Length: 144
Image (tube, rainbow, N blue to C red; front, side):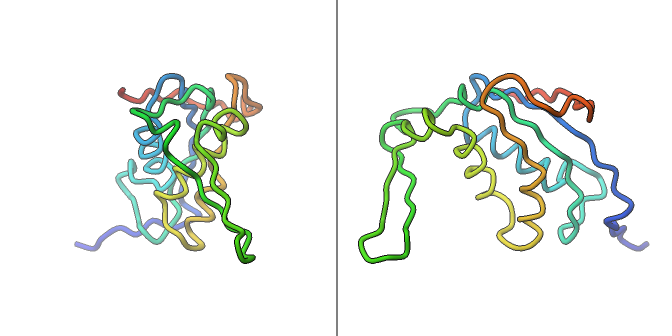
């Protein structure tokens, strides 16, 4: 018996909407990354993008446990000497909470062309409104 290999033109993509209100960042990110990769499908193929589109709403109400909100840092470098910048997650959550979720999810998918293609299917919004009603997204509940 041969193993089934999914082909990119045979894949039907769905749209899911996830409410991040009160959800832990890491647990939310693992679920979203799994859906983006397509691991919930019976015909998952590692070298083909067979995942679905994910819309995350209420990104500003995601929760970090413990003292991570004050102690966890996001580092970026300008590639110039002394160009290291550190920002706390509390500052990031106030200014751009969409970036926090996108950064957590992008760290959990492959770091290659396929991963860059997968992360484009993630849409994150600060509030409870999103402009993707025409795609008829299905609500997806995550266990706390």
